[in-house]
Length: 226
Image (cartoon, rainbow, N blue to C red; front, top):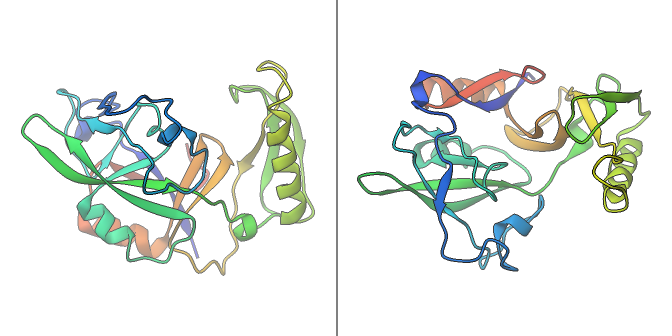
C-alpha cells in the first residue's frame, strides 16, 4: 500500500502563510495543564488549549497552518476534514474539539494531537537514519539498524541524552528516509523523529477521499518529499 505525507499549503489558496500566528489564551501558557507540556503524549480533559485566530490576511481552509506555541506541531482541521479522518483506521491520534476565531464568528475546528509513534510499521531495511545538529542542517553520521527494536532503543537513548548535553552538543537521531511495510492496516497515523519533526501520513485510499472531497489548504506528497 502506498502512503502519503500531509503538508500545509503555502500558496494563494491560503491567502497568507501561516494562517494563524495569534491565539486567545484564557490561561498562562506555562500552566501545569497547558498543552505545551504534552510532548507527544495524550491530552486529558483538563488540558488547556489556545483558541487560534485566523489572520486577517489569510483564507479559511480545511487544514489551517499555525505558528502559535502548543499548536505548531499539531494539525488543525475543519469539521469537514475531521469527519473524513475520524472514520478511518488510525493509531496514536487524538481529536480535540476546538474553535477558529474569524472576523465574523467562531467556527468549529478540531486539533489533531499525536501521542504515539508506532515504529513497527517501518520497513527498517529501506529506511535511512542520520545524526544531525539541532537545526537539522548538518549531517554527522549515517547509521543502519538491523531491527525496529534496535532503532527504538537508540532513538530513546538519544532523546535522553538531550537533557544532559547542551544545545550545541546534542545530535538528534533522525529518520532521513521513511519506508513503511506494505501490510500496514492503518489509514492515518503519525511518526515522530522524521525530517520536519512529526510526519502525518495517510493511505492511498484516504488520500483519494480527501482529494475527491475538495478539502482545501492540504497538500499530500510522496512520503519523502519536502
